[in-house]
Image 1 (cartoon, protein in one colour):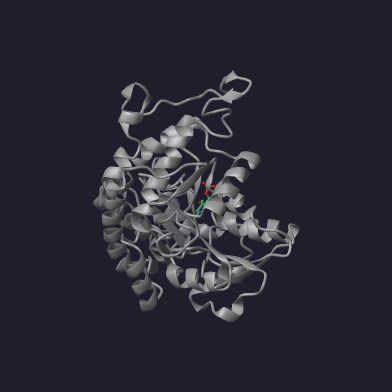
Image 2 (image 1 turned 60 degrees about the vertical axis):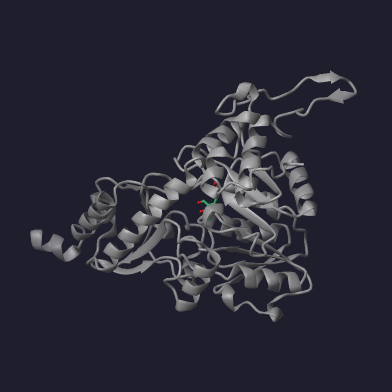
Length: 397
Ligand SMILES: Cc1ncc(COP(=O)(O)O)c(C=O)c1O
């Protein structure tokens, strides 16, 4: 089996991220685990193979990374992939022609592209809901196999009541799949809220340094785990030994980084709320009091991504150009602050109409707040906004 939890559960989360791959279990007691690059392993004889056979099937470094992610989640099984999309599409491989899936309409653009491009080819029917909190029993069909959601969602930070949706799904014989990339197991544990499968882009907060591409699927269900292990080996988009190592290293500071990032994001949010040129700031719970209460109930923090809309008198191109420290780039969750324009970058796969319906306009900026000094972050973003105000520019002319 992919991996099982081990005996470290008594440690607190911020100890587990550091000690979750115990040095005392490493070869030669090395404090950091070795990277096993060998693609294949010798058989003792024709009837006896050792614990490892071939890198795609399993690898000692990957196994440690998978154990670590399962341990942090408090889950029985975790499976490592070469990207978040590889993890997600391996989960979706479980669906067959004739199946019906319910999804939140506000999800990562790549996942949306998979649902709208690949599901029709596979004759899988997918219904999108703009507000999954309104989902009701009559929305389920006899062939509904799963509900998929992100909470908070990329990039609007809309929040969905995971426990409520899990119960609804189970009442109708469907599973709940949660993409927990924005929260990580540090801030939110969807399995404990009733979800059946949790998926991650580990390229983001787990890696944390914008230098690896990886994804994970986590579950407590033996039947799903067996299926995922088979798919992982058969489809083959597994996390490499090197990325497994980088993942283990990056994860050691996950809670430390997120604590600092959340402190920073709070200060940045406050600064943007009174900043000229900012029309609206989005964060988990900003949509409604109901969503704020759900977020407070199901997560132990808001994470470190916010989005904001600029007013029509801000020249957005100038804003991005005027940033002195923060870079314009896709992705999030690294130590460095990054901004992007979802409408033309991460959410470009959405047709215009659908983007508008989920509330993502050309004037929205997604902001992944890093661990830099919060005053430097605030100074950079506010100076770039102020110097991009069109009327200011016209005064200069
Ligand atoms: C919420 C979410 N899920 C999944 C993915 C896909 O992950 P990856 O880029 O590692 O394939 C992303 C990427 O941005 C994401 O933001």
